[in-house]
Structures are given as C-alpha cells and as structure tokens.
Image (cartoon, rainbow, N blue to C red):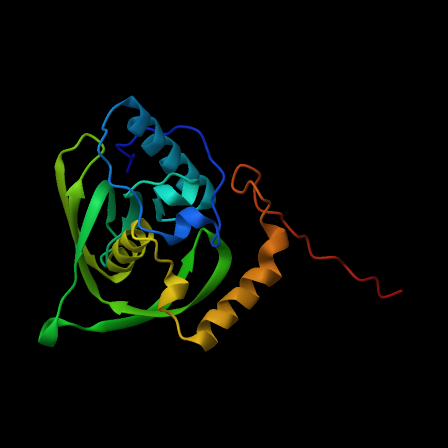
Length: 199
C-alpha cells in the first residue's frame, strides 16, 4: 500500500532530556505551507528511523502534532496526522490492560514492558484543520497513546516504575554509541561480528 502522505527531508530526532520533550506543547493554530512541510519531513524521519509514530517535539518543534503509520490488530496499515489530539480511554468494566513492549525513537534502541489500556480513540484535526478520529486496539492503541503523551510532554519512561525506568536507561546507555547525534540523518552504526582466529 502506497502512503497518501508526501515525504520531505529527514530531520534529526530529539532525545529525552531535551526541554521540548518534557512540557505541554503549543496547540496548532496555523495550517499553511510551513505545517505541510513539517508533516512531510516527519513522515520521512519516521521512515528513516523505522518507527510507527512520531510527534513534532521529537524533531524539536513545540507543537501538539503527531503522525503515525502503524498496523492495527488485524495487520491493516493505518496512517494519519493528528493536531491537538484528545485521547479517550475505556473506563470501568470496559478497561482492559495490555503489558506490551514499548520503545521510543527519542530513546533509541531501548525497550521495556509498559502497561496501557488495550483500546484508544484519538480525535483532533489533520494538517489542513479538518476533523479526524482514529481508534484501535493492539499496537495501534499503544501508538495513539504514546504519541498523544508526547504532545503533553510525557515520555513513556514517566509511566514506568523506578526499577523498569532504570533498566530502560541502562539499556539505552549501552546502545548510545550505535545512534549518532543526528540519527537518523546519519544511519545507525552497524557492528559486524569480528571473527576470532583460532590460530
């Protein structure tokens, strides 16, 4: 399936610890060419990083905006742009939790279990200011929650216990040298296994 969204330039991905990642981002109010360019660049950046979602603050832009290209529970590709997202999660007897692996392109390479509701619905507007709504279960539900969190200044590490957060940061630190500062403009460093001579 060919994407309906244009691609632009790859931008470096902003890492956890950068201020824009940890505060409530500004609402999108302008829907002109500058926003269209940002969206195109975000899709290219997400593709280069092999991710399923990306928020504007992950490329250093202080806006409540995310893009995604993620399979639903049946493996069907769902892609979209959401500005000023509002998330709806099940409550009471309808609320079921999923403890699945989660990672973040802004803490590249590291994954750990993160408990989230197994269904999510997000509403907002697209890059043209038109209303949009997306919902799903499985990886799509996790993606919609993860990316909406970014627009609110929350990284998924904020949702972990101290023990799991420490493990996550330790794993990220071990892998840090694989990801150049401007990744994914400069691709991940590939390590070839060194053959040890028996002689």
